[in-house]
Structure formats: C-alpha cells, structure tokens
Length: 322
Length: 178
Image 1 (cartoon, each protein chain N blue to C red):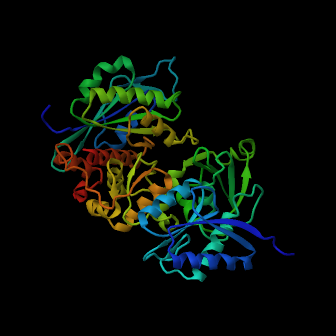
Image 2 (spheres, chains in turn cyan, green):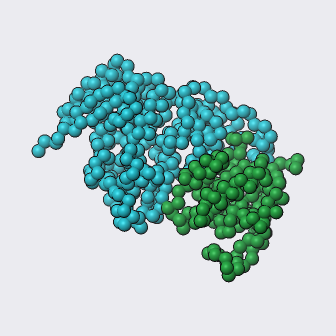
Image 3 (spheres, helix red, strand yellow):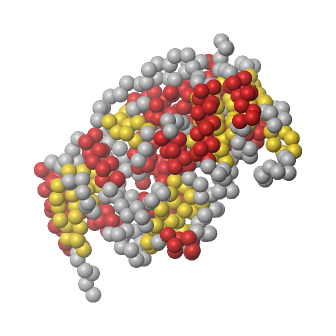
C-alpha cells in the first residue's frame, strides 16, 4: 500500500540565492519521500518549518517568533556544526534534504490527535510537544514504562513522584517515545494519580542546559539578552557557578561573550544558559552586539563582607569581577 | 548603622520552615523560642516559635553572619525593624499549602521592603513535597505583577543543600543588582 502524500508548508527567511535555490531543490526531492512541500517567504504565520539564514541577530528574532508559534526551525549559521535544526553555511542540497525530511517527519507527529508512532529525528518529541500551539490540550508521552504528560496551558510537565527531570533528560532523543493527545478529564481520571508531580518547562530547559545542551536551539552569536524573571531553578540541576551569570542576566542585558568574560566562566556554558533562557521564553532580546557591563559596584556590591559571606556559602563573587 | 550588613533574616507564617531553615545552615545550635502549640492551632507540628530564632555563622576572618528566623504574624511586627536593622537579605518562606501563598508572600515582601530597604529579597516555597503539583512560575509572575522582581525558588527547609542554594541565589542577586 502506498503511503499517502503528505503536504507541508515550509517558510524561509534571510536565505541568499545559493541557499534559497538549494532549498527549492531539496524540497522538490522530498516528493520521493511522499512529502509535498510548499515553499513561501516567512510571514510570521503558520508553517510546519521555518528555514532561516542571514544576519544572526535578525535570524534569532525570527527563530523566537517561530518557536513562540510552535514552528520548528532549521538555521543555517556560519561556522556551525551540523546538528538537528542547524546546518553550516554552504550546506548542500543533500544536507538540506535530510534535515527537512527529519524535521518535517517529526513535525507531522504532534498535530495528529490519535496515538502516533515514535519520533523519527530532529527535535525530541517531548520538546516539540512543549512547543505545540494547541495550548488547551495535554499530550501523554510514553517510552516503555516511562510516562510524562505535557501540559502546554500551564507550561508544565506531570511526572511520577519518583522520576526527576535529570532522569528524563538523557532519554529525550530516544526514538521510542510516542505521543497521545489527552483531554483534561481523561488525565485526571487515568493519569493524575500516577503523575502527581509538576515541573515547569523552565526547570526542564535549564536541566537540559546542564545535562544535554546540544538538544536546545542555539541563540545567534552577538545576540544580547536579559532575563525577564529569575528562572525556576532546581538545586540539583544548576551548579552554583551558574548563579552569578543568571543574576547578571537578571540585572542587565548581556552578550554571551561579555558575560563569559565578566563571570570568568566558559563561553559554551553561557551559550547553554542563553539557549535555556530563550527556550523558556524568559528573555528580552536586543539587536545591539555590544553591551556594556552594569555600572561598577558601589558600597554593597564591593563589600568585603558580602564576599566573605558568599565564600562561606560556596560562591566566588570575586570571579565575577569584570 | 555604619557596619556592614551582617544579618540574614528568614520570615514567614506558621509552619513555613523558618526554624528548620535556620537550623539547616547554622554552625551552632540555634537559640529558639519554641513553645507547645495551643489546641486551637492547626499545623502538623507540636511547637511553634513565639518570638524568634537566632544563630550565627562564622566567616573566614572570624566575623559573624547573624541568622534570624522571625514569625510573620502581625502581633509580632514590633520586632521586625530591630531584627532587620543591618540585614543584607530577607528570605520570605511560604508553605505551598498556604491558603493564598501569593497574598501572604506579597504582604511580607511589602512590609520588609519598607522596613529594610537596603536588604535584598528572595522567596522560598516550602513543603512542595506535600503539594507536588505546586508550580513556582505563577507565584513569581504574580509577585512581579505586584512590583517584586526577586528570586523565587522551591526549597525544602530541612535540606542544608537547598537552603544554601536559596541563600546563594539571594547573594548573587544582591551582587549583580547592586
């Protein structure tokens, strides 16, 4: 029996002629996979996938827009390592074709209300469920005996009392997850007592940043962000060395390079924090590529006593001197 | 007061975990003013703090950080200004099982930000093991809407690691915001 041809809408933004042409070719070749692709310029509306290129900070803004609408993205970034959802500048037709196939196959899983098969590739199924646009529904994800319910409306996960986020994270990109849509009454009746513990999406994103940061979409280099709120952090998933950069992001807008320097921590770590913050929807993004550090401390911040207290509690604020 | 801010104050309603939190991070056995609960009181414990808890932590140079646990009940508010003079931080503890955690937290934040304007603030949500469905972001967002942009974290007051993490968050917040 032939698999029916599935239709997808793929939007693009910021692609140059070379990558735009390769995208058209890669899309047309997907007909062999029985995927009919309709390409159009990104208009901020619905699409199954957005392919992004061009200037990094503008691409980051569009990526945020897309994720806010639950649209998966494929970013073409200079110097990037090929990862699910990301390709380097100069990506071939084959590279684009393979990423499109994987991301669209994954995108096709969620909109179906009935039980569906496992995720094939791309962004992990649970993260895709968290970005689903249908905020009113619940998604039960199962992998063997492991069950998680994604509640988009409250931006939370329901887990068994004995299962922690750090135990879920290593399993996220396992191919054996499947998803089923639930209504609230079914959840309460059949799963509420099995999955009593709630964790916020934020807590999961920061847990991923700690344990599997490559699963989070990266923020564009040069983007500066500020945290709108102090994130919902779990002491088991966030090392104390992350608290000062988080506090600085809470206080002011920073680029990753400036923040890494100010806090004397690896740039990669800051990038992971940026990814978690952006995925959590806790950020204000800015276009400027250089951000001055906050005003130099006066009084309280330079207090030796505060430094001693911090050291007593295992914090090195001196490392944070810009 | 001319000396450095050298007090850390835990405040909260009955059963929020103030005494337990102070005890969790103290170097020495805290001085406590616990008394048996009256028969009319409703809480799953047999004693409650009727005045305050006090303890201290010795720092590298021999200086002391003074720890206080202060009841949030109004009839004890006369002691709040005395305790908060020279406070570097005030941590509001609220039980996830409280009738209205946002309202009770907000009331204490408003009071203590007025009494101790130089102190940094943070909020710890306790007893989430008994209320596993409790989510922190809605509380944080409600406090933000009322003008308080502060760290809000869940904390098990019995756990030194978790209370320490909350204190670290407050200290980082204070350092970055100053």
